[in-house]
Image (cartoon, rainbow, N blue to C red; front, side, top):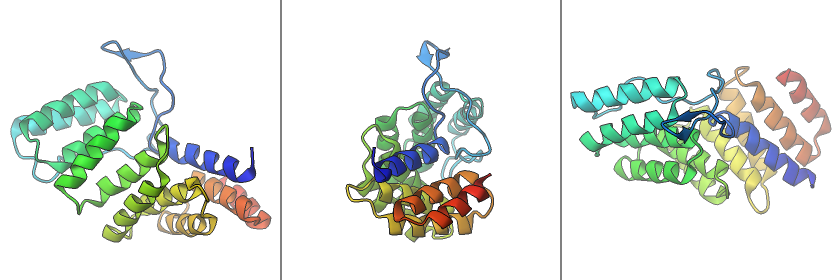
Length: 227
């Protein structure tokens, strides 16, 4: 395996760990597979507060149940709760972000992408939906890096101070048919600048980008920072 392909695969895997819990285990919920509990210091969990526009008491209650299931890593139970919230208030974009995230943790990438896409249709100014869809594109069984770059770029335009937009776009740049390592490096620099010292994995990712650019000294410095 070439260095470029190796670097891209590793970067994809590491960032996937920030928003996905890994392969299914033998545990089940209502006969369905459950994923292991992720590291809560590193995952992107939905907001505990109901999203804007969610006002029906039944929908709010269902959302809060979904959040509780998410915190317990009960992804399929979470999607069922969000199903109910969506049944009551189908026009609230944040519900599709929440259910899409539960689907993504459960490894159901197509369903996650469908929910994020519907959420974007309902609220095209929600940077979080664009960020999450970009991430879903990068960790799909068949990654869609061109679409991920577009989505992450839109998220950055809407919310330039949020670090994950740059991180997701950096990974997407490494997945392109002709990887754009310089662009990936610039985005990882920005991610780290906005999230300094709080994500050791980011330094590992940047080290692999430096490797692919032939920057051996900088790569080693980032590996030391990641320890």
